Amino acid sequence: MSLEFAGVEDVRTRLEAAGYLVDTSIETVVYLAERLGKPILVEGPAGVGKTELAKAVATARDAELVRLQCYEGLDEAKALYEWNYRKQLLRITHARGGDAAGGEAWDEVEDDLFSEHYLLERPLLPALRNQRRTVLLIDEVDKVDLEFEALLLEILSDFQVTIPELGTVRGTRHPFVVLTSNGTRELSEALKRRCLYLHIDYPSVERERAIVLSRVPDAPEAMADQLVRIVRSLRQLELKKPPSVSETLDWARTLLELGFGAVDEQVLKGTVNVVLKHQQDVERALAHLTIPPRPEMN
Ligand SMILES: Nc1ncnc2c1ncn2[C@@H]1O[C@H](COP(=O)(O)OP(=O)(O)OP(=O)(O)O)[C@@H](O)[C@H]1O
Ligand SMILES: [Mg+2]
Image 1: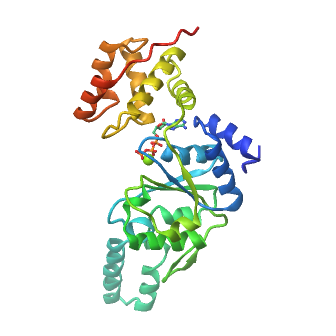
Image 2 (image 1 turned 45 degrees about the horizontal axis):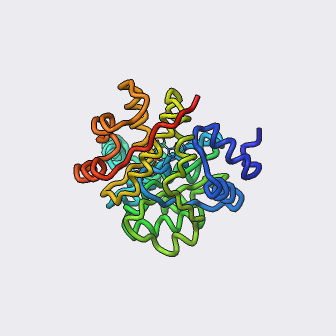
Image 3 (image 1 turned 90 degrees about the vertical axis):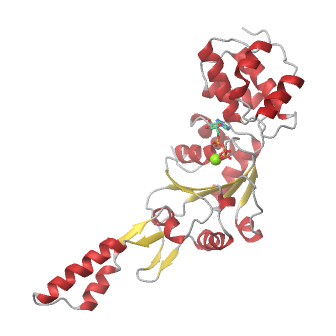
């Protein structure tokens, strides 16, 4: 089997084999990203499968997944590389000791101090110089500062980085890059320009039901169907935190665990805290939700 995607259909089949159910826009963007060698910027609400998409692409391409989890204050030293100061200090101390016993030229020591041996790789570096097929996941990129975004821009343009003491570092092949964002802030136009944009929204009832059945294989079809319909109604209630796909899955697992085959008023009251995480949302749901009946299926 070729590791490149043969077409949009092939993306669908292979992501599904990796446990990820796509829709038309997802499969198209993934295919194009590979063909054009462009990063994908995935935006959308929490828990709709943004991070999971990168993992599934890695599995589907038999690639190594390198993950850079972003947070406020993330800098070059934590993302790219830093020098191992402790080890360098030890080397210097050792060289000094050697000095007394005959000496070691400082030039030699200095050359040595800034060699691979003293380099601490952070996630971006191995992703850039990997000889293997790699998927680089830059997760929650909206959390980083503008300064770091500029560094990312540089890396995503050239897929190489220059370490002053070592020279330019680049791999034999570009990583497949997925950036995710929860949209807590606008990303720069320059960053967006370099990426293919993909918005993942809450899935349709049909796709979410399929996701439940694939992730919680013991769930009866009728229960999965009723659950996703309820979750869909919950999402329409203007809650503080609408339930995500992960919460639908947790709910299905909870019902199975408790031996409930369907949701009624009582079950809803007892288990709604699995899907809703704010008391005011719970109250709103219990007051306004009408539970759709469990469909009869065989
Ligand atoms: N299309 C899908 N196919 C299969 N599973 C899915 C799909 N979408 C979501 N999931 C399930 O939902 C869970 C949550 O997805 P994920 O962690 O990728 O969400 P996210 O969008 O990255 O959320 P956050 O913004 O909170 O990081 C996954 O563990 C996965 O089980
Ligand atoms: Mg995520």
